Length: 362
Image (cartoon, rainbow, N blue to C red; front, side, top):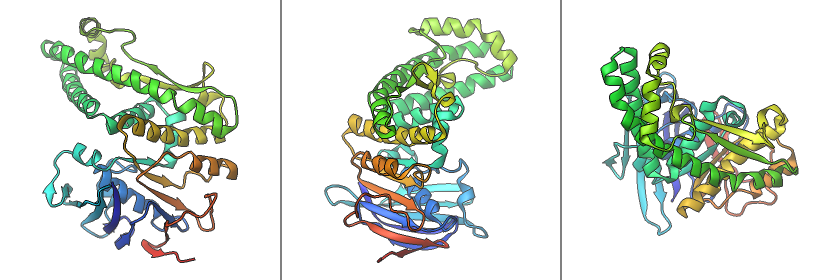
């Protein structure tokens, strides 16, 4: 599935744009602040129903307007077309595919699997544990509806248990434990499998692109340790109820799991150079895309937002050569950048200027 055209209205600095994107590769060039990343954010919203830049999509409404609208025509491998639209107004989001309301974003996610490369990805390597949890949860949700459902259910029960803790409703707290344990065990099992699969791809990829023999892997450390049964976890939760009440939160569980990027037994963030850490964050996304294709047999859509600037020219080329097969890729570059080893045939190139996108015929 890929997009062949997109219309954007009152989104960030884009007042109105109707752009032909009927190509495997779409290149957007321009100086900073002209709308390149905004364009990619609009595509991401059409794939996910949410933004990779903010959790409050009302921030994307163009200044002095009341809402934004996005729409695109997509085409599958058999040439069948469908229209996806998002309207955000009055603090409400309306998503439709061919005019039919989409009330659950999962229906959108599995129709348009999308992976974005952004500057904030560096937090996967050197940021707080929550960033790596988010990365793996998103990676797994993209190929596993069952994991998506388990994670959603776990978070709902966790919210209820935390509310009972805050109100010191001891009679209710432990009633949530068995369900929390059941969904938590599923999440732990799936995460362990995902990290194993990720580590079958990422270390070799890093050695190849970095030109080093560094053994960089991800270590998964479940909050509930080696506990394997619901009864064990329920006993643990019950024994720690007093601590949870003091802390006003559930202090253990998959929401506290840790994923640590390691290099020969040492946290990579403490020994890797700035360039190596940036490279690792980019390769996280490439490994995610490769693993997605292995699990599903599908090709993702890639959004690559100016993440190559801090790499030397050789590594830039190697990164682009290492991209997996994709249904469509969007790139943002500064003027006069040329990261491709050769001209991409049939690529569409646009120059971004103050929220407008003009075909580059040079």
